[in-house]
Image (tube, rainbow, N blue to C red; front, side):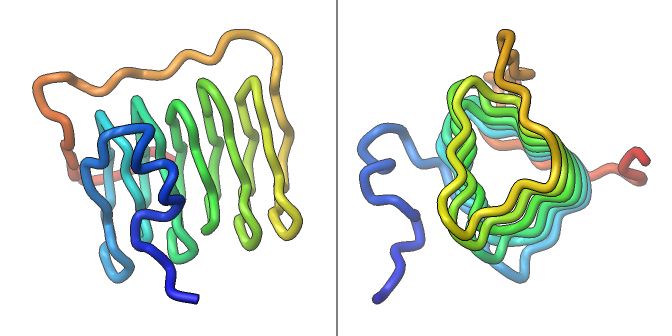
Length: 142
């Protein structure tokens, strides 16, 4: 079965796709997004999206992830914040805490951490003047 690079075809109709990071791409710093985005590369730092964030099978994130909806099919070593929902798909691994009002863990998905489902989840909104901004930093906290 051939996979569509955008992931769930129904998601295409729900939001405006603004891009993707393919495997073999590495980013150290902060990635701020204003639309639906897919990551299949490696990121060390912070990823923020106001919309749907898809972490594909090859995604390796070391740091925090924020989005309206976050779908994890790769690996996240850090906290995940989903304002509406977090989905851990088959083969997806989250090693950290999940903060969301709706958590879905499909068979084969793994959460090594705690889930926090009460209270309002607030996201840090990316700057509207730059829909996609990758800001490299000399050192990512830690």
